[in-house]
Image (cartoon, helix red, strand yellow):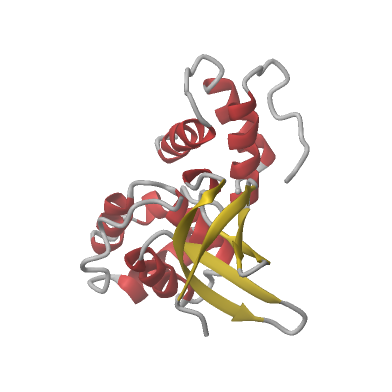
Length: 203
């Protein structure tokens, strides 16, 4: 089992990043890949969790130890898989998530993709009072070639919407959010994605 990997980030996609170490490129699934920057001159430390399935081995990456611990707690909940856990981690308001769990706010939790009432209640049942110290974890530093918003001109917006699809939000939800971002003036995909996630959680 891997704890972390130190290497250079060579590629960033809507659902994952590629980290090179000793001539090997590791595909690492992360919640918000656009937090990371492709820079072959700089080494980054990525915390890892490996999941072995019948026909594949998958690596999940995190920007710090706390983020990894929150992921592990999430996937321990019945009904929460790695993809749903990453969708929760992608939102920068970890304090809001922890507060919702501790205050039985299942309505907040159902705003995440793939989380229904039953799963939200299970999250609360399993994790209430068990997330101390994980509130301040930063969001992770995500390809479907889909024309989400025909009018859009910013490549950052298109990448951000592709990342939302990769996180599990529906095409209808993404289109609706994309239209709201047409007048947003961001300087990076990360800024667009963070704003999109805020809109998703405030719907």
